[in-house]
Amino acid sequence: MFIDVDGIKIRIHESEKKLPLLYVHGSGGTGNVWQHQLATVGGYAIDLPGHGESEDDETIEFVEDYARYVVKVAESIGEVFIAGHSLGGAIAQMAYLIKPEIVKGLILVSTGARLRVLNEILDGLIDNFEETAKMIVDNLFSHSFKDEEVKKMVFEEITGCGSRITHRDFKACDRFDLLEDYRSAKIKIEVPVMCIVGSDDIMTPPKYSEFFQKMVNAEIKVMEKAGHMVMLERPDEVSRTILEFVEKSGE
Image (cartoon, rainbow, N blue to C red; front, top):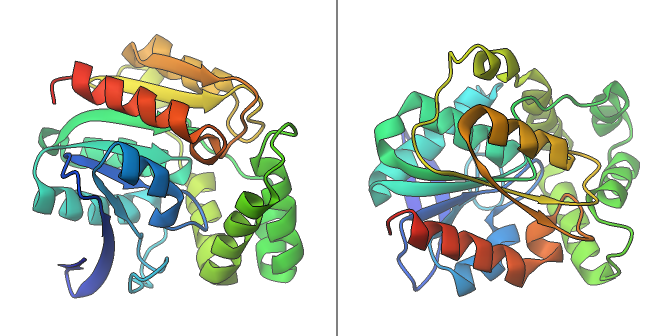
């Protein structure tokens, strides 16, 4: 289905199981990365503006700009759990800060309170897009993960989004920094939080999730021999963790 958000058509992938759970993909992705979770757990997955089948909003620069779309979509569903991967995890945090009353819980997958990006990636996404996309994909998965079809799918998602959108995503990540606001208790998350991370994630290693445990008493699930794309590398385990968390947190 499509939802109109201030004149922009946003694609929402629906499960037959109408769980109040909204999935948000990461940089250069689409809602397709959540297909296993949609099928096994239920809920809804957004294609962010400019991604997949969603129309673009060329004014977007920051995580907050994406988060406003997620808030609008969440409002159309009702009070929801938000599961966000990487950039999507930053967006989930920001959506909560914008409108906490619509959020029942946060599921932060392979993400952090700050998401710095190397300049060589930011520059490469403009100057040498396909080679940089290949380099990114090489670093998204654990070395023990051997499914080349899944890696190809992620590469095609990134190249499908294109240089401008993927660079915008990574730039938004690089600008995102709530670290000191958490440390100073300026930010208080008053809903349940579950962090899911791969033991072999070099993009957002487990210590990023451990920070949330210290700051907001988050639960943590570390998936062994999984990298940054944990929901594709350990789909059944991620689905089981999400479902248990949602059920335990009051759904």
